[in-house]
Length: 224
Image (cartoon, rainbow, N blue to C red; front, side, top):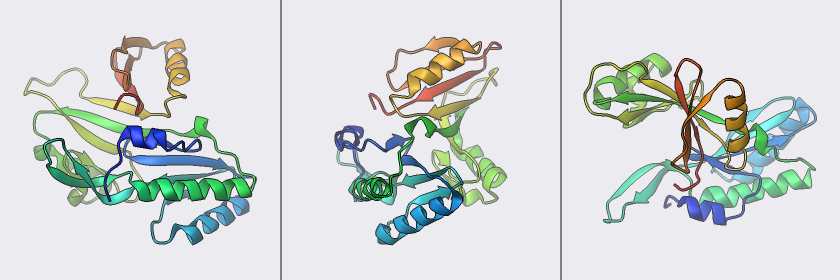
């Protein structure tokens, strides 16, 4: 299956879902753990082999959809594969939303958030296996330019290409992925809590810093 563009995902009109980083995410509110388990079981029955990642709690069920090995085509015709959102995910997302609606479950976009760690480096291949082994126990979970824990125990870490230089003050930074509509409120809250605005020139991410100058990015799919 082909990787879908951000525009195609937005045009699909999935009000309950948001693409954060590489996957579609949704959270549905439930009244009890038993209700959450029942909903998750119902999702499993309609998934038909395209199984979502599911987290069940006593108050909500989180779902994550993406297609392993989907195909991305560059403008010059070059193809490569990665795990991202395809039509399979959109179709299943619609079915899950319909299932939730039939059970009276409401979606909670305010509860959606994905945290990634970015590390500046001039040579990701040199250090990627180390961070993969440290975080996941297996160096094979490094797949340029990122480390992804298949069990979801740790945040994803990706390597931002830089020129070779002396070690700067801050090489790590947090990327906080949020739905487009929820990002402004999170930025406002961080600024009100003592943060400063570093840059908002790029519509897809806003750079903010704490009182000591440590930076983080609020990221969305807007403009990507």
